Image (cartoon, rainbow, N blue to C red):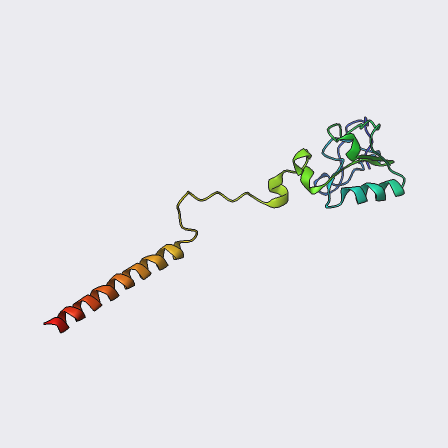
Length: 145
C-alpha cells in the first residue's frame, strides 16, 4: 500500500503498479492511487467494509481522496476508498462516463433514415408501384380501343 506524505520515490513494477520502492519503503499516495469504487450496491459495499474494520461515513477527514463525499468515504489501514453508486458516476474524479459506458453515439440529423437500406427499400417500392400503375393503365387503354 502507499502512505500519505511519504517521500516521492521511483516505483518498481510494470507500469508503476507496485507501490513498493527500490529501497523497500512505502511510496507516496496521490488521488489517482487511492481507488474510487463504482458498484450497483454502494450501501452493501460500505457495510462489508465496515464489517472488516473500515471506518466509513460522516466525520472522517480524507487525507487523499479530498473530493470524496463524506458519506461515501471509507478509511482502512492501507488507504482510503470512495464508494459510488451508478447514479453517482458524474461525481467520480478518476473515471468518466465514456470510460465506463463507451463513446456516446453521434445523433442522426433530423429527418434522416435510420439505415440506408430503408431509403433504398422505399425507393424500390415506389418505383414498383408506379410501374405497376402504368402497366395497368396501358392495358386498360388497349382493351378500350
